[in-house]
Length: 254
Ligand SMILES: Nc1ncnc2c1ncn2[C@@H]1O[C@H](COP(=O)(O)OP(=O)(O)OP(=O)(O)O)[C@@H](O)[C@H]1O
Image: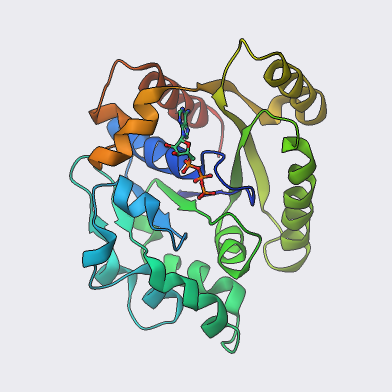
């Protein structure tokens, strides 16, 4: 059975893209069949997967508008060994254009049904907003991974996201749940990071992944080469942390 995981946090710059690319590559390196969906008009997940967003014939935008099938749009990424539904700036228009369409929240979910048997995991990188694109990600997913930086306002933003997930559960996707909260860019020498991390564990208990993603320069560099960190510097702390996360996710029942 495929596991469909949305990677979401409406706060910007918390590590959604970094987590999407490197979790996809780590799961693929363990032998899992992975599709990564870029739902962010910034197209950073696309670029970081080694695909030039300026040279695309088809993107996820056309899937959401019903103009293309996934089979036509998906690409296989060479370095990462996973498939990708790419995105670029064009996707920013989808928000407005989907408003008049029927079942606009479940366009992605409907489209994925045709190909989900091809994969063990489908990861959906959501944009930094609680908008219709993110809603499509949450409607299509079985569960949500929430990357977060352990800093002062982190918990405040989290309650908006948790409320949105609750609304999605009541409205469109009754079985959606939080898969896990992932501490990213973690610096153990930072006292505030430790305190926020402790609060997270108090509030969310075992929903907080044991794996912690450290702040690591190799993770920040790798997208510039269009590579997951695993193929940029396999021995780096960042590469090892995302492999550990992949194994932690595999060890939990779906
Ligand atoms: N563990 C890490 N160590 C060092 N740098 C990191 C780490 N994780 C992410 N970064 C860097 O931090 C920045 C933001 O990360 P990323 O793009 O993954 O966040 P995001 O949540 O996807 O952002 P957005 O909300 O804009 O989509 C990027 O420059 C990325 O390279």
